[in-house]
Image (cartoon, rainbow, N blue to C red):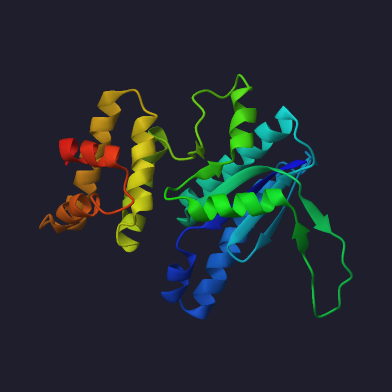
Length: 251
């Protein structure tokens, strides 16, 4: 039994369509290099291992001890936040507990094999693909395991590595809004803002968040078309209804 995380770049296919081949190579190299650097800092903790292939990352533990889960979650947060701040890449994923193994396989010189098997990987993959929000979806097993740890509180089925203080840091909010615009305002971005607000108890920070969003949109388009589009797209299908009520109040 292990904890297994599957992380994937949000909008990877759309991004590649707008890049020349050499730029695409640099994009994926920068992505992989950051993961490598973050992983190398925890290399002394041999309990966490992983793979990178194309736009995806698989991280897994050797056991299901609380310390292993905590170390894995911390690594996931570090990777996700740094990928956004450094490479303007948003990751979405799933985290599950269950059977998982790397299958030994002979390789040919020109044909490498990376065989993995297990219900935990399948569960993590399905959780990632089912998410309508930017974050790490947790299986019920992982959620229950986290609820036993005193370091975690108010556990739900989402590990949200983006919070309101993170958005206020540097130019993170502006970069987030730009990515939302480039995605044609996919529901994931609105739902992420909803969970950011839901987990924030300071109403002044929430008011500041929407004030800053309006300011950014107006700076990007002085005719206020982006503000109107942001509001209209917020009532699209798959956007959380509770967020739509909040949107009516602040925008």
